[in-house]
Amino acid sequence: MLLQLGLSALGRRAWRRKPLCLASRLWKAPSSAPMSTLLVNQGPYAWLKELGLQEENAGVYNGSWGGRGEVVTTYCPANHQPIARVRQASLEDYEETVKKAQEAWQVWAEVPAPKRGEIVRQIGDALRQKIKVLGNLVSLEMGKITAESVGEVQEYVDVCDYAVGLSRMIGGPVLPSERPGHALIEQWNPLGLVGVISAFNFPVAVYGWNNAIAMICGNVCLWKGAPTTSLTSVAVTKILAQVLEANKLPGAICSLICGGADIGTAMAKDERIDLLSFTGSTNVGKQVALKVQERFGRFLLELGGNNAIIVFEDADLDLVIPSSLFAAVGTAGQRCTSTRRLFLHESIHDEVVSRLAKAYLQVRIGDPLDANTLYGPLHTKQAVQMFVDTVELAKQQGGSVVYGGKVLDRPGNYVEPAIVTGLPHNATVVQTETFAPILYVLKFKTEDEAFAWNNEVKQGLSSSIFTKDLGRIFRWLGPKGSDCGIVNVNIPTSGAEIGGAFGGNKHTGGGRESGSDSWKQYMRRSTCTINYSKDLPLAQGIKFQ
Image 1 (cartoon, rainbow, N blue to C red):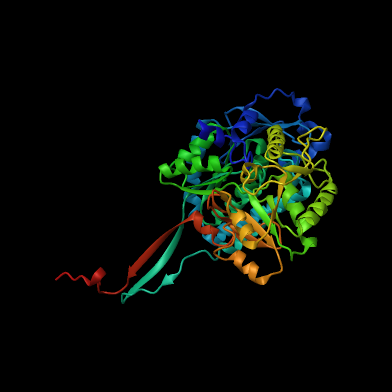
Image 2: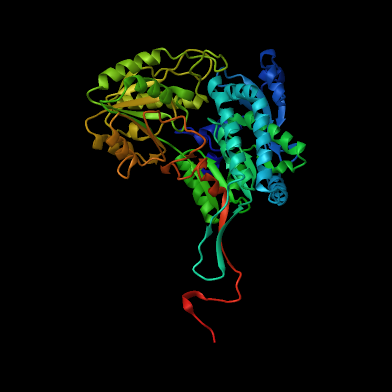
């Protein structure tokens, strides 16, 4: 039952990245908002029609649009107003879509990789044409500010550009054979059907990282976005569908299946899904991994991150303050790479806390669609309650709130970002990832102590130090340094580039998306020996007379 509740949130990166059971309740609540109250019908939001959105939208795409499941409504976190409705998938829709995706793969796998790259290039161009309006939708439905939302769509565009080049480069080596007249090569082939369960906090980019790379590798995709950002999923898929249609390719190459717990569970158990990419909480990710492993399937997990910045006494504080501010309050603390823990050398602790609190005062809180806003709402009402409960728990465990920590008296899910000092490094609340803008500031004495504290949490996603000591930098990057998948120096924990492999270690799941050699996760490898001689040398020198 827990698996079903978790998967219904589709990889939402919250409640500690995703309070999935609560999100499921929110999503399944019946909608009774009259059509006239929907934002899609109101003048200031007429731009939603540019994305093909209307009062009620089909939530299933497999070459044609449909959906025979529950009709649900998505809401704006900045004002709690209903935006529009989506018809989710039934299990019958799911079954039909998987079959159509498999049929589409028969066509797509025959397209040469550079030609597949050309289609992905066109997808990137189509996204460019809609980048502003699609970014506005992300701000309206998810709640992040427009600069971040447009930047998120740009990430999808960028990974498309990256994938185009990659489409002419993927492949294996020709290896030296020890046998005369033989060739030894490595052959890489597509897996087939890649399922993607993405998160509310990056409703465009996470799918983009998976989709662009999976497509040039020769796979087709089945996407299940977060229920609370399903309009974004529909809008993105409409753009992809237009590109596929213009090239006379099966639309099911990029299938969409909006739905609840039953759809998420079906994807985890379905042997026809050759790779399941899941972004979400560690607890739900573990259940997904177990379900997929039961059928000996492949999974790619991008889970929690209790990320830390370590600031040494020689650090440039003019870099530290804006970096810590951005990493802690960006996206209202709802990035998987957000900084949760800030370790300060005891000699600079008080100065940094004072300067950081002043910097927090300058953060402009408001409507995420307002270009002047730097900090928007949390995504759900449940997230607000989780924030309040965690701040109270931090106080009970000995912490002092030196900035923020309150719910703002205004419409929407707004809270003041919090700075908490005075807690021990091993306090339960510090050791637990909370998907909210709460920054725990801790005081340390030595390098060994700080490195150990960075590594003592269960997750291993992102980490950073600020220092000018070259030896310390390389110790940090080395075997006794950070155990995270992202290890930075003099930059924040957030803001990863698409050219590198994105992902983490330990309870973060071990998956890698986007750049570097992440493409290998979307393909299967074969070692091939070819005998072009007239002899047959056997292994271990065995000879049959």
